[in-house]
Image (cartoon, rainbow, N blue to C red; front, side, top):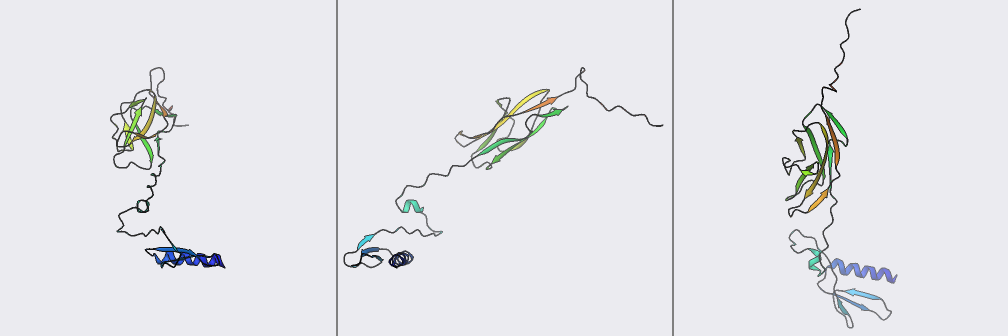
Length: 182
């Protein structure tokens, strides 16, 4: 019963949002809280946070505590297309897409690397772009996101893709026409 009285006293004190809160023990050792002092009571600070759109001071700063560190964001930046080890026949351009989570924020930029070198034609804020002038061979593609200071926020894994072109020794096979008739 005493615990219930204590809890109710505390809730009353907090719900009143009093400017001053006082604590004291009675003759039976029960702790009481009030917004009015009684002989032998001590003043205590009760941190009550009010939410109001006009509040300009964050709750942590108002209470004298240091602000909480920013929440670490887990980034994901990986080549979504082409698929790893995808083979393209008789092309000289491949459309690539980079999957980003979260998307690019103000000041951030996307960089795409082809065969380990920055692909300068890729616009920094675009996630899908067509790589031009690709010829027979194997290619490696990777991406990363940089913040406004040039710090890498995300470096995705590299994927490989391959382009095959017909040659005199290995021409493109065309279907053999079938004779009509009977």
